Amino acid sequence: MEKRIKMDIITNSRIIGEDFAKHLNTLIDTRIAKRRIYNDTYLTDTPAFLIMKIEDKLKRVKLHVQNNTVNNDVEKCEDNLIDLAIYSLFLCSVLEKELLK
Image 1: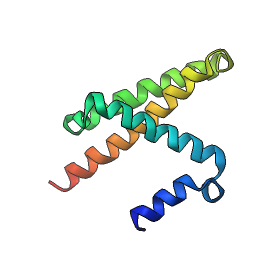
Image 2: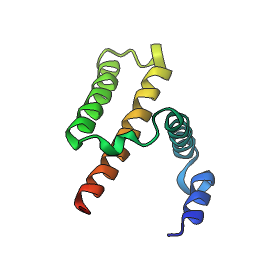
Image 3: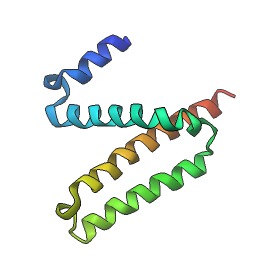
Image 4: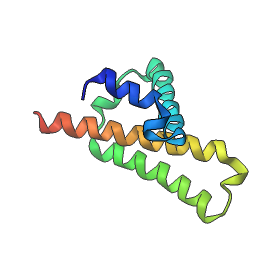
C-alpha cells in the first residue's frame, strides 16, 4: 500500500476507529518529539536491550492495573503504553536490519 494512502487511513478515523486514530497520532507525535532529542540511536541497540525496555514498560503498566491505580495516573499509564509501542517498533526495525545483514 502506498505511503500516502496509509497516512490517509491514519488521519481518517472512520476507517480505523476514532480512539485508535487518536492513540496512533499520539504515538507519531511522541516519536517526532523524541527523535529531535535521540535521533535514531535505537538502531545501534541490541534486540535484548530493546526487549528489556519493552518488559520494563509493560511491568509499569501491569503494576498500575494490578494495583487498580490506572485512574489515579491515566496520563502516566498512557505514556508507558505509547513508549511500549514505540520500543516494539524499534525492535521490529532492529530485527529487520539484522535479518538483512
